[in-house]
Amino acid sequence: MRPALAIAALALLAAAPAAADDLVKVGALSISAAWSRATPKGAPVGGGYLTIRNDGASPDRLVAASTPVSVKVDIHQMRMDGSVMVMRPVAGGVEIPPGQTVTFEPNGYHLMLEGLKQSLAEGQTLPVTLTFQNAGTVSVDFAIGSIGARGPAATMQHPHMNAPAGAPMHQH
Image (cartoon, rainbow, N blue to C red; front, side, top):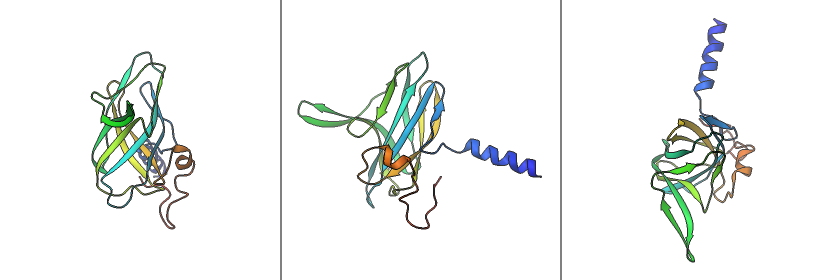
């Protein structure tokens, strides 16, 4: 009976999405530094940030994302248009050229979570499914940092450190 339990436990681990501080691989792509910011109660939107590296010989493209925590997820880009910062959806997704790294970060490419069904709580994780044109689909957990987080460093080292007392270390 014990070998069956061990096999079942391994199967569950293999099926679970990667934690936010893990490197996630799908096809020739490596996904890292996945993070988000906490949102105030009742906020309708949130953002998601990550780094994608393409170690393959062909380009790939992030074409879609989804999460059970929001009604929809769009890929957006913020950029300067003259002296004005503008944010727009990116039609057709974002290309990840071979041998290149694309970083989704505040004031650049990012995932826009629209119609949040719940607040994003600091210290928890946000499950996101990413869909690539060639590599396919992969699940990634984004570490949720503080409302004012500026990057993944503080959120990824120990995502459970700022959780309320008694909260689970990781919520999957």
